[in-house]
Image 1 (cartoon, rainbow, N blue to C red):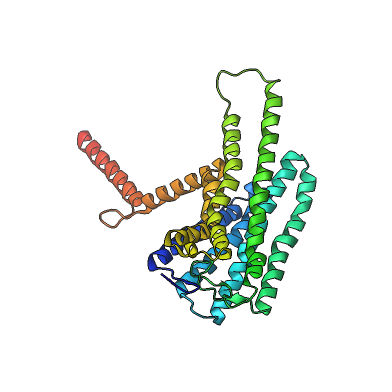
Image 2: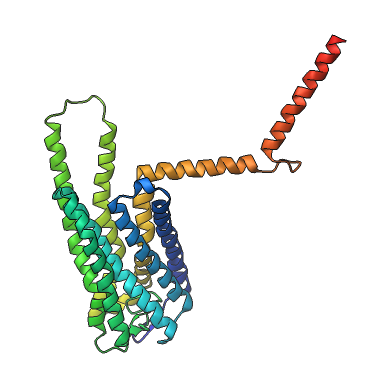
Length: 335
């Protein structure tokens, strides 16, 4: 399966990774399109989510290109793919944490003005820091073929680099570990604040026989606040496990199951965000269903009839035929 420091990535593993890349591209594109189409839903958190989706889209495309190309050396295409995936993946970490920080300031600190003022800082950090790291790594010849040691077919930090562990940390792992620590803390604080606010408000509200609709929305928001850090950690943990096994020089990092989980986790962030923030978000889901229903009804209305005439024209022709028959029968009765 693996020779020396090279991890073999089987065809089945490549197919699975390519499928998850395609799902992430579609999911990220759907988030971006819904933001463009429905202007009344353009809140600041969703705008930050769009920037995160752009990075996830770039990551999925660059990963798919690397897996499809099957690199074996430090070619120009390998370095370009490694640079794009390094930038987008690192930027994704920063935008994920930025969204959590924004929600914390907006909800817990109850300051929309301060939260909105942080958006400029989010852009500077989430785009600037990954760009500086990536350009520096490329200029120092640190990006290239890594023999899938801590990847699944794509290029990252060159396997021949003597300080590759340091650059693995700088180009992703240290920010990934910080996100593991930061996200659960911030979302736990947000959930505690919301629960305390609901408890305080319940003292002044009459007990209702039926659950109000707003409670279902708040329960869905509570589920999302729980799932966001959990999904992030579940998807990313396999990459971290393989990195730790690399530090321990353990051959377990080359296990096909672990390699497959790593490939699925690193390429599924866009798809997971789409499920969370499109299909599990009631206003977006309702509009999508309405749009799809309208498109389906229009397609049925425009579908050709058996004689090649569209159904609407056929219906009009049938109605005119009925009128002519009624007219003819009336004339015969008069006679």
